Length: 483
Image (cartoon, rainbow, N blue to C red; front, side):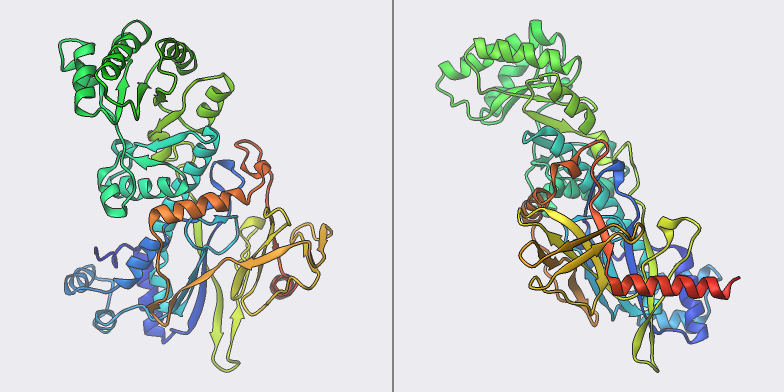
């Protein structure tokens, strides 16, 4: 397990030393959350918690870390000696991986002494921002495919090994049936998939011989790349010839077909489907690649393309049209030793979306009787709700917009779970494939209107009355004191 303790911004450490020198180390609450869904979508997928857990468990400073920090000239000996015994002692709550989530909701809540909570900001955001971005992109691509299999194969275009490994992990959680990344397959026990390259075809005297050799080697996974020379005049006919020979030899055609990697994929797939059907291979797979994303897949579907399996690389592993998730980490409360309670803190901005929600919070998800998400409710952690009582929801910005839910009209559940208590991990991460299955169920709780690729319906994220009043009070007090 890698020690990522120095995977942090310098100012986290300089602030830590400032707290240390000032004698400030009260327990605080920080929320990690995002302000906007990626790709202008209607939802996001929480991802990366397992790696956050590994990071927190292994959080410590080695001797060489201390000496490196000493050499930079920023830090005094007494602070560096404090770091030698550093470990995380706080609490962490989180939205489980694979859960559908929305802007302004805490993905991760950290309750810890100020120095500890400050140090872990950068790594938490690095891990969760990246994987949540790719999982969300993957869910969008899989939605566009309407049940067809999506294979992630962007490793060679990812921004480095970690982005390739953990991006593939996130892509599988978001819905991909497998990845070309063998190391990800080994690390997380997820399916690995792949065929062959154009260079395989070009290495043989002719296309037929290349196909035949490949089919002899891999008869149970025989997907032949047909566009090296001429897709319809050479590639598909040679593939059909090989399939006929396999059938005549009594070789079961369990998983076989062709892959298109260039040209007009709609036209070529329609023509190839006709040729395969006429040759007696109606169950042959037609897969496609070539700079695909959710919008192109959706367009090809609308054009009647006969593709049933899709390989998506660059645009998925990099989330090319939206390359950053934009999660932030903000102080929400500070423990008052005299009052023995958390005092809410708020960040104020001229940009409304940057004003934070104060206090120690949790998230309740409200479903209608169809099992679809009606709204989310951010409330204080000590607030509790009963399905036996009416529930009044209101828009925290346009407060006149209200919805009253009577008992029997809704169900409610808290979606944040404890992950660390007093520095000890109390949460066991499911397997990636189990998270994928959970994510699929989560996506089924969204109405299709919220899954639209363009101009999706926005799921309402409301504040409890108590939280709303505290937020307004803090804003009013700030305004009164700064006239």
